[in-house]
Length: 269
Ligand SMILES: O=C(O)c1cc(=O)[nH]c(=O)n1[C@@H]1O[C@H](COP(=O)(O)O)[C@@H](O)[C@H]1O
Image (cartoon, rainbow, N blue to C red; front, side):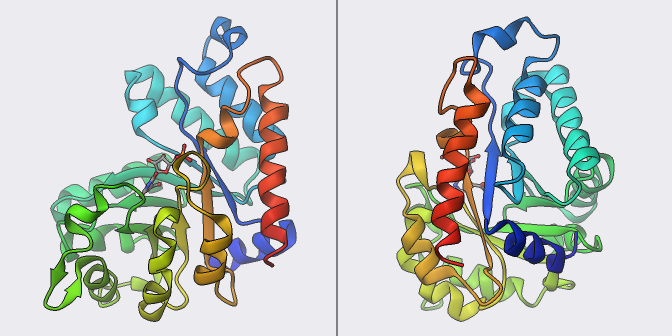
């Protein structure tokens, strides 16, 4: 999907909400466990109830891989369902991949060609030749981990490298990669105080911001320091929306939670 289309969708829905489909079979409502594919049925109900409030969906691949072939099938059915029924939605494979060049090309084919996701999350650690194979795909986006939401982010990402924190080096260096216009970056909502410095390096790029809700990040701070004239933000919430209820009304309650976030977002647009 072209970035222009994503921006149009954000403006028309007055939302930059990304819903994380981190589906844990132990947390989904009991009545769905009788279905042939409970994970897909759960996702379908959540997507149908929330698609008008969100602009993006982000299945975290780990939650599907953990169920082997059945999990992978549920993931494929979910992405096909979105692409067939709501093609305007931006889709993110949260896979955090990256490897030597020819292997990265295979990862890119898996998520962009076979699965037909619009974007994939990538770890920058292996550098240029591990990221560029993803960037080579036209109208697909590579979402590079810059400054993550977790405590372990301070282990490496904030270490000084040639007098600058490593995450700033990642941002600067990635801008020199071929097709760098296809880059977006992950910045955790729990790190909102770093957004000013991040925007000084990547003033226009879209940022995927997880960590509001369950992890404690503030939507207000992220908007204050991270928003651009083209919005430039996709704010993810997973558990806070999809597990708001684990009763028969789960999709309805998820929609209420999504609507609360959408209304808060609309106030910043
Ligand atoms: O790449 C991500 O999406 C990601 C990066 C990061 O720094 N922190 C982070 O929480 N995530 C993902 O974002 C989601 C957050 O889920 P909730 O905390 O339940 O909203 C999970 O799928 C995480 O794997």
